[in-house]
Length: 281
Image (tube, rainbow, N blue to C red; front, top):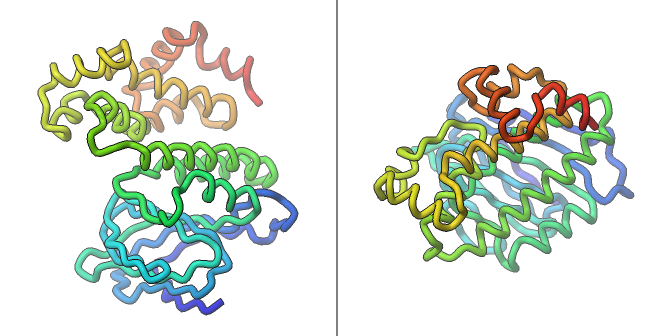
């Protein structure tokens, strides 16, 4: 494999010491490349007959991706997949240096998941918020760094969910209903604080139309759906992490821990503490 890489802006966690080729799924590296921070205008990666599977998410900036002779202009809020055996190279625009997150995977299941859920000849997914994949992996590593097998187990589930979401995003037509566009925004903003007004401005509709369209399709308001989505994520944190209630509340952008606890009790019938004690893995 021929690799050329100027990586002044790279920062990575390597797990290759734990690599077992017999395992169906493995994450070899999790990293980030912030060309903006160090003004790395020479960042460049090229692989011929690549031996790795990589997933890269552009958080900011833009650049060029060339895969097997096809050229893509990649931009903020997009994901690209670099499959094993591909010939590829990529680099940021010098006038809009990128900040990105990436991971390198291996194992038959990892390769199969990408093959199953990514349509043939597709490597670039535009307007897809993959932040939850990388924040989720960071959370899992912080929780299970003393037990890498557990980390890999939960990472497998997270990556599978991610690929299902990618497939669903690619399957949507440009003419999808307003309600599903709203749902998409809410689904991928669960760690933020998005209001109905924000969505209305983004989609260029009135607030009343946003609420009415969503409720007609899903039987609840966007605000109700959004809080339920956050509660489901809170359940995951309570079951699988050691985060305090205050930390979970902050991660999910609740006003404060008291509001989080009341909302959790309202939707689940029990307090976060009782839920954790009952369902902790």
